[in-house]
Length: 52
Image (tube, rainbow, N blue to C red; front, side, top):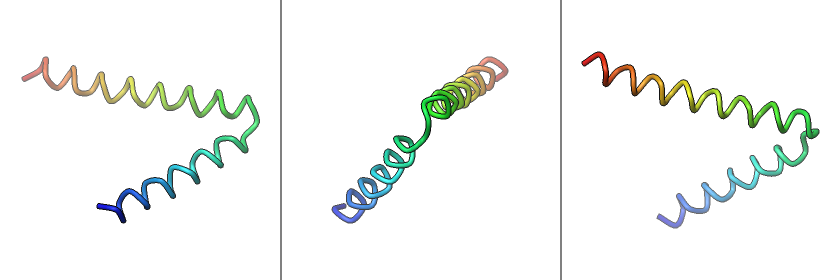
């Protein structure tokens, strides 16, 4: 379990460092894409439940 936590923190730190290194415009773009992807996933689950 400790190894999994260490890997998680290592990758999380790398992602945060990458995100912080982007310009503000690119940070907004990444944030926007994450929201769009989240909406697609939620809509997929809602549509799959409705069509059952």
